[in-house]
Length: 188
Image (tube, rainbow, N blue to C red; front, side):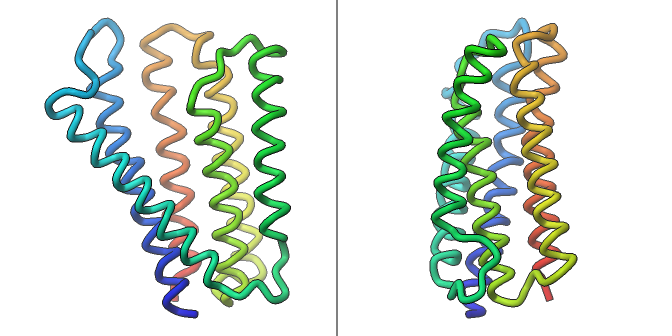
């Protein structure tokens, strides 16, 4: 059991690293008024590190989640995944048709992140690492980071370019902070 908990925590740490490198890459590649090759040179290396940390973190975390017995789980993992897929579809149409926001990769990342985190918290609770208040706090942390991400996702194209540049960094910070907080809450 401890091996799987360690994998979840390692995956979370790698995803925080992914967010950090994504922030650095974003700050160099998307500054308003500056045209650069977003995948060449140091930017390409940063993007490669971002992707490697992200894929490794998600894979290791999912491996740990799948290894924890879910006896007495508060949430059904399949329901969480299906709920996340349904949320994506609903948000796709609401943000595009109702709010006029072009759909971008960030929407699938936001929804996928929330699903992964809910599954991780569920597994950590089943492993005895997030009981009672720490479990509820983790759910609220995920919900808050998701809400911030969605609000900023919707307004991104509605604000001035310089402000959008900075606001786009906030979800990476809130999601990294959420994963770090959950990792700490699940520690012993």
